[in-house]
Image 1 (cartoon, rainbow, N blue to C red):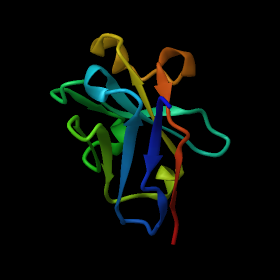
Image 2: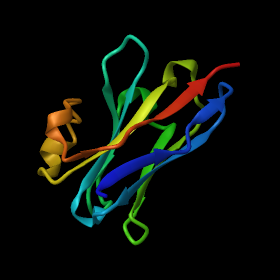
Image 3: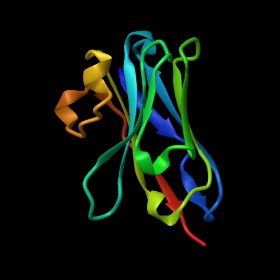
Image 4: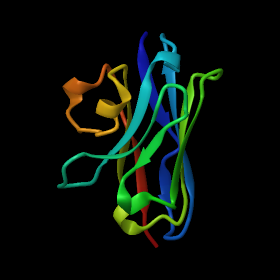
Length: 129
């Protein structure tokens, strides 16, 4: 079955850290750029970070710069989002998405499902004391 699966979410206190994982099955991630999105209750989905297929280019939402780091291991067919200094406003369901559009287009991280070839089901991140 071709799919993306996120994991690593959970409940963490403000200032804490989590590492999210995005695993691909049924296809290889080598040819895909990967983006992380999040959607908080009552809010629109927003792009958080993305990484090019080679890993040479990364982009971040301004509010997470310096706190989140995206990386990938193509040999393991995995992409990661290391999140540090978490804040309550980071609370959301986090999704990964994959597509082969040109990176200058992809990095805009327009949160429309139809723009991406694959989406995961999401993992909940809750930042609360």
